[in-house]
Image (cartoon, rainbow, N blue to C red):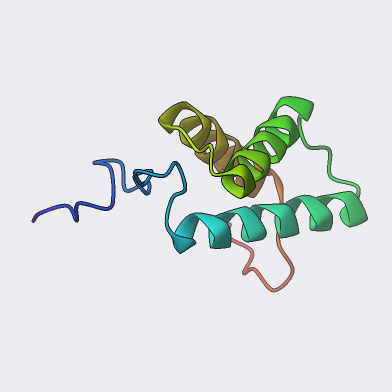
Length: 94
């Protein structure tokens, strides 16, 4: 199985030459922001460092200053946020 050239071996999008990753990252940023919003409404505490990683990633994306380090921090934070939040409509696993 080959990995598309637009992604890293981890499956994360590779930054383009301009410093702006593809549209999948925008969608991931939107999803992560929705998770944080839901967490706030539900009273779920999210680590400040994870919220900061999301904020820094959004700013870097919008400015076209995306780097591998920012992507790595963002996706690690997104994984922790998703683990902490039970999104509405998600099936409960036991």
